[in-house]
Image (cartoon, rainbow, N blue to C red; front, side):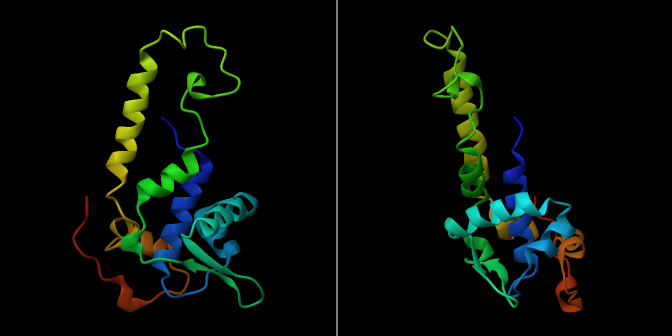
Length: 157
């Protein structure tokens, strides 16, 4: 299984916003910190905004920030949002499926359950779980260093 670039970028945007809580972030700053294409990032930010994960403000003093608290953002929900339109295999695609085995193949059912198990494992993981006490991530993504925020809790597995 491989996640799409958009899912990866969505996680990076959300982690950047969580690390910089309470600040308006510019998409260009996130793109630079996350080594991402500004074009792709803008599309991902739009999708996150439409689905209520971030709020955006246009203009000179604009930017984006989290729309919800990090503990209220499920990583499973974010991944489902960005991965749901991408068929895992050809036989999952409603259009363009040319597999002659689709009507009799049992593998599809097993794959479907495995993909659901993947999301089930991510559902209880919150954005807060990814950033809390993660000093390395904070150093990488914090746009305005805050020495008081640099304390590390125990690692969360």
